[in-house]
Length: 372
Image 1 (cartoon, rainbow, N blue to C red):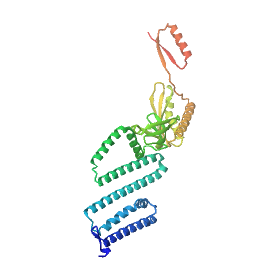
Image 2 (image 1 turned 90 degrees about the vertical axis):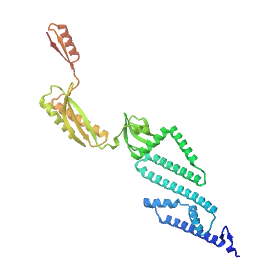
Image 3 (image 1 turned 45 degrees about the vertical axis):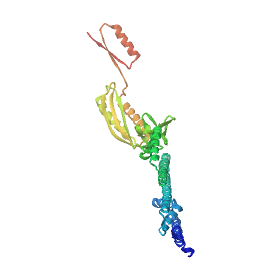
Image 4 (image 1 turned 90 degrees about the horizontal axis):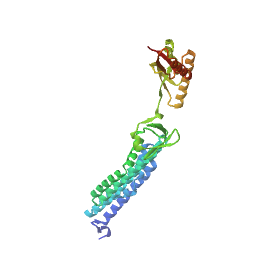
């Protein structure tokens, strides 16, 4: 009998050599295909970059196990040998899946960070954290699958991990809450770094959006720090996204102003507002009879979110109204009080006291009421 016809583990030497040749040949073909595709595929588009990343993270060990699986179809193997090979092939495939997942997660994180560095640098840390969480979850699942493939009962292990996870979550629920709040801020973007926001009575510019807290620089200089969980429970006013500013202001004219001048005041206010830019006039009305003034209310829009622009415009309006009132002889109202006393005609001492009080405070109107 020739050596080539010798039987080894149920197969002839020739069969083993042919199977070996098939395994080596398939591995070589797959390896050459990998190298060629990496040279041909340039990461010019997202799809090409994605495909290139998958190819880069495909290991030669995986090619070898595929090639051996093809070669074994030419052989007759015992049930035990087939079982051992199936376990090894499953383990290598699981590791390859983990490597693909690792590569694709890293690919996604890098692309998102590259884009957000130009748009929202504050969310970079959050993106990296999400990537890390995905990788940890991926490797935990792969590890459990590997243990199960080796024949270990993972039911108790999974239950233990679940109970342990619940205990840890309860212990760090505030931290976990802030972490998920930071992810929510990153996804929903109620504000980004550089926005000027108001939370309750506190105002400031967003400096940093972290995993647990967000930091603001207040107008008075100090740093304000808010937990992300508490922050999302609050009402947030984002002034950076303001398109225009609605302004409501009131002004008072003195009682005793003639009816003709009272009717002319709304037009004076309108002229003062429309003389400014960039503004859009809404209305000006004689609103009410106040306690010490004829009250006028005006509404207009500043077509700019800048606060200094608004203040410059309001100042100019005030100057014009003041000059127009002065030219028209309209007095600006201020708080006054009239004290009415009921006196007898012969109460000279009281009258003298009233005169003395008026001399001390000419702005306070004091008038006697002569009664029976």
